[in-house]
Image: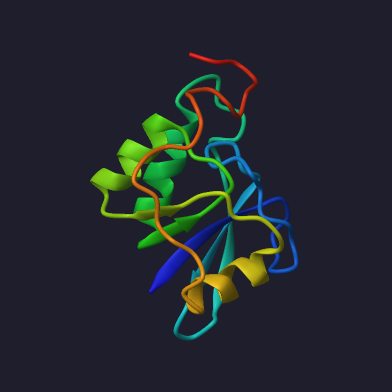
Length: 124
């Protein structure tokens, strides 16, 4: 299975970026082969719609799950529509997050865990 982990830097030793839509990078990891690649998040500086654009990029990358700190409602709905499971409140390094996922220590969520625009400091 391919998963995406939000990351502050483009490597496995990076901390998980707590923001989904405005994460600096997405690390696409194949959980079976352990191969990975860093993807720049082009939605980082979007004036609006960052969560939706980020979710579309994850879907297009072929990920079946996203591991992140926080995910807003628009991004969550888009990921859900693309059959991507969402795991929130993920902390630590990307490498640890992938290990925890593989070990079954993470549980998918059924709803967003933050309000719209939380990654920008704006609410609503």
